[in-house]
Image (cartoon, rainbow, N blue to C red; front, side, top):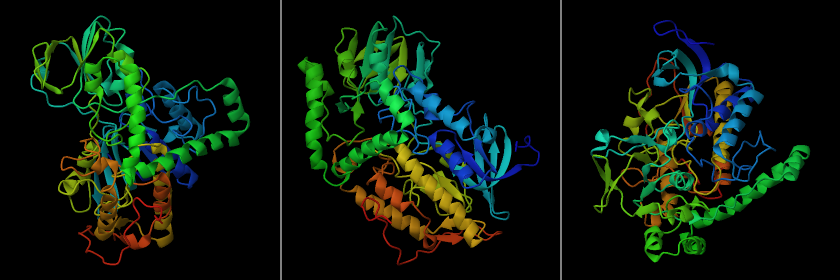
Amino acid sequence: MAAQAAGGKAEHVRVAVIGSGFGGLGAGVRLRREGVTDFVILERADAVGGTWRDNTYPGCACDVPSHLYSFSFARNAEWPRSFSGQPDIRAYLEKVTDTFGLRPHLRFGAEVRGARWNGEESHWELDTAAGRWTADMVVSATGPLSDPQIPDVPGLADFPGKVFHSSRWDHDYDLAGKRVAMVGTGASAIQIVPSIQPLVKRLTVLQRTPAWVMPRMDRPVTGLERKLHGVLPATSAARRALLWIVREMQVGAFVKRPVMMKTVEQLAKNHLYRAVKDKELRAKLLPDYTIGCKRILLSNTYYPALTRPNCEVVASGLKEVRGSSVVASDGTEREVDAIVFGTGFHVTDMPIAHRVTGARGTTLAEEWKEDGMRALRGTTVDGFPNFLMIIGPNTGLGNSSMILMIESQLNYMADYLRTLDRTGHKALQPTAAAVKEWTDGVQKAMETTVWKTGGCNSWYLDDKGRNTTAWPGTTGAFRRATRNVTLSEYEPVPAGTSAAPAPARAGLPVPAAAGEGAA
């Protein structure tokens, strides 16, 4: 099923999957289980793994327990730690690829440069770096943590030293004995800082906003545990279920009663006070917003690293680069040899949105420009027939495993295919009214969450202050909401037509975006 060279006839498949991280590989497994073998997985890199392939920075690890941060259909009895590191997670994804026979479907070096809906033929046309394909359906699994974001800092282009983002770590550059500036204090930075602090001559941490940090309850998984999980798979399933239940019970504090977070906040303060005795440094590291408003971080080594003599915390963001010096907003200036950006990713402005053109001749980015990202059940968008997203708008989590959300969307994808077969329709698109009802329900539920009331500005929010990233409910509620395609929320798209804006349709039930009543 290799695509033809540019200019030749494109190869046709039933489904084209974009990306080979957890979402893309999961889609491949589910397609095969549904009896669909006519598909390709288009990957821009030369290996599978997504964010766990790209992020190889020192100390890179997951902050969700391993037995929950894995597919339910591919439980791993051999996790070495309760919170596993990047090499183990990437190895797991390689194993999933082989175990479920996905290698023949993979196309590496196939970055999608453009995908356009052809209304005359009722299929998608994809232009990639490896050739062209057409597909009845496109499943975008590019993920929100795939394209690094480096701020436009005056003078950065003229910096004579080394510059790289945490997700594009330069392993050929030796940090030993260097003066290093770490820009940002998010999830990557708190793993990088303690990993490089013992090596560097001087480490300057430029902190725009302090993070709440909780202890990391990590430990090796014993040989006895691994053997037990291997011999009795039910024990692994029980462990996963327990981890899931604990996290489901936490959701109420995040989405309905943020005042309950005060207890957790006190635990985080105690963690800070035990590790940092210097009052001035402690004051810099103590957030002034409700815990959970920004992502809660886990580390036992971050605070101790900041107390070391060769480490300095500048409680101000990077304003400019002046020659070989970094200059903070408060005027602090430090000469450095290297700048490492731990400044996150394009989450609310996902780059793939600029490359996907729907039936109205507009891109996803253009459709989302005024009102922000939106999708029915986090998966489909009006005007984009047979286009599904894995980890789409408002599917992110603040306290549990994204694999749970991915598997729910895979259920929805599978039923979407079955619905096409059952109805005989070649293409479906959600009605504009259904997308609006769903989005309004999600945003209404968002009003009581800690992300909206906690007093912070996080990467969950877009440039207009809307939270288009997080899911304001339990993973169980989302699972129920995506169990089946509700046909009344869709309309067929006949061949030879464009998807004109759908008229508002009254009477659609407001989806229980955050509640336990999601159907």
